[in-house]
Amino acid sequence: MRLIEPPRLLPPTTRVRQSWLDGELADRGADGGETRLLERATANFGQFVAEQQGVLLRWGVPATIFWYVSGPHYLGELVIRHELTPALAEAGGHIGYSIASPWRGKGHGTRMLSAGLAECRRLGLRRVLLTCAVGNAASRRTILANGGVPDGRAKGEDRFWIEVPDGGAPQTAPWPATPPAHGSVVLREFTEADVHLALELGEDPYVPLIGSLPAHPSRQEAEAWIARQRTHHAEGRGFPFVITADGTAVGTIGLWLRKLSEGIGIMGYSVSPEHRRRGFAADALKAITEFAGTVPGVERIELYIEPWNRGSIRAAEKAGYRREGLLPAHQEIGGTARDMLLYVRTLGCSPCSRSSRGT
Ligand SMILES: CC(C)(COP(=O)(O)OP(=O)(O)OC[C@H]1O[C@@H](n2cnc3c(N)ncnc32)[C@H](O)[C@@H]1OP(=O)(O)O)[C@@H](O)C(=O)NCCC(=O)NCCS
Image (spheres, protein in one colour):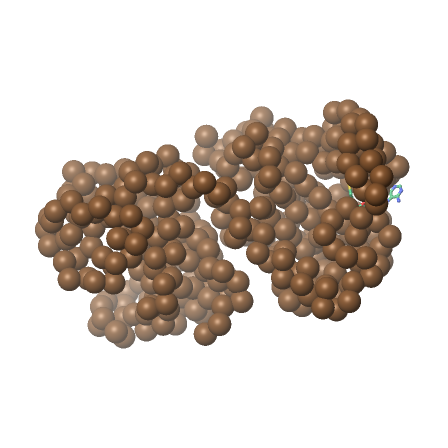
């Protein structure tokens, strides 16, 4: 099956219900294992998923469960145990994983473990233990491909240590399991069907000047722009969202991470001309700002707005941003260096964003 987007690790999500049930059924059919989990999930998938989200206490240690997901497809599961008990230090280790049988043999296990190591780094782990049953050649190869160094055997398991890589390229926080929403808008991922939104925005005189969308785009250019939006998150650049109201795509908003090393997230947004002045930009800013509070490392959000842009200024103010100053000739737009107002919101001081980041 062709995947429409690169898989990534997400907190367990109801979005992949059917695929999870199909995978679990195939796995239990293959190994003849017990089906209690499958029965529980079939009876109430929402509750089953909710029970697996957040930091759990399992094996006597804090643990986080991730699902490896592409669009509606569930490919596998990865569990990180934040600490080791004496038993886990012998066999079990920090990370457990499995790829659902329909997706095996395609390199997903190796890539999922690599993504899992990035999550380990975020949790502060620098060296992790993995163990796999003696004779499990696929799992052994997966671990070795991720830098596993063998360290003997215990309880019928081969043991390996992996130095968690520095990451080099920025590691992006997971895509939100629950779409950010506020008031009348819900933010979602770009899909190929959003080409009409790109065509509409490309007709606005200003939107093409402040982003990468060509002015008066052809259908092909609009499709190419959408395709680029769909890779930004996997490449660590940030979170591009489509703003929807009553299921209609009305605009775009993005949280960009190019200044993440300074604790800064940058936002940009636009609403299609026919949907303006209905509060969509302000609601979208509120929704994405709340989400930004859950992205590790983002302490401050910056918006750059031209002084004439009353709608954008008003939307920013309504979403709680305050003006920090005027930056003369700060940004080239349409071939001239333009003054920009800097609007800022500091996160981390609200109890809500602090607890959601677990600090
Ligand atoms: C700026 C933009 C995103 C605003 O979108 P929007 O959905 O129309 O904004 P909202 O409806 O949420 O409006 C927010 C506030 O601004 C006011 N507003 C909107 N457009 C306005 C305008 N042209 N002049 C004055 N006030 C305006 C609204 O009345 C509302 O204030 P209120 O609640 O006090 O009445 C939209 O005009 C746009 O996409 N412009 C082109 C791209 C752009 O400028 N992006 C921002 C770059 S910094």
